[in-house]
Image (cartoon, rainbow, N blue to C red; front, side):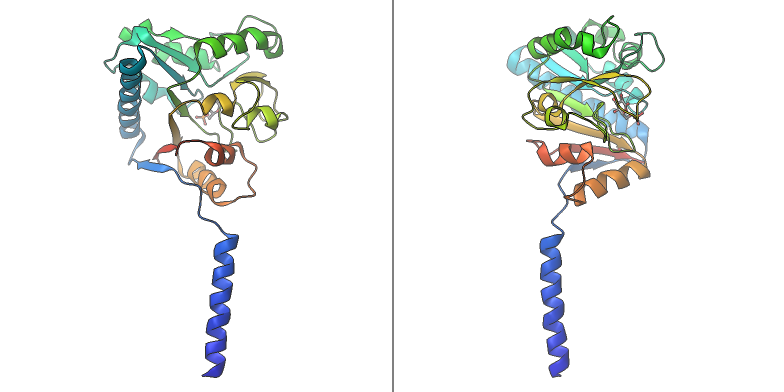
Length: 256
Ligand SMILES: O=C1O[C@H](COP(=O)(O)O)[C@@H](O)[C@H](O)[C@H]1O
């Protein structure tokens, strides 16, 4: 009897200790879907509602969207939403330093998907310029983003399986600029061993200007990466910096 009660109190002490050592995961507001198509429609409707709200309040709306492979269906669905597109400015959260007609160009993705029909009246603010390197174009891009895209109203962030967001990769050199909520610059020229070409990206300080932050994440592997980063206070992944630094609770849109 005595031994049992000693053990019980030992177990309780261990449990209390573990609770302190493993804090709750950083929160997201979860919207889970059975498939990508349903997710794309729901996300397009939610983003369109935010844009209409911004136009009603301020007469204009500013949207930053991710590139890569995940957002294609969402961007097509968004282009079909009824809203005053002429008062919307769209900026990619990042772009690869390739020609705008290159298959890996995020600008090309936007032109092929979102900038169709009535949505073609929106203003596109490209991050890529006809300069040889992103470093050479940094100043004009930074100035235009600061003047015409910030503060943002809505951001839709994708995530790579390595936990990168926009072009903020795990091997990012300037974490002080790229990942700090109050970093000094809204835009950063990037070179990463994970990326075949140089890039230009918004920083988290620019992304965090938006009152609506969506995480558009598909697949079991990415979900594991996200959950692990949300749980682990020692994680250095850029997605952890998003979850930890965002002034608003990010809305997670996930499907298998
Ligand atoms: O390189 C990039 O990767 C991420 C994730 O892309 P995905 O192909 O896995 O969806 C994307 O969010 C980012 O905009 C893009 O340039």
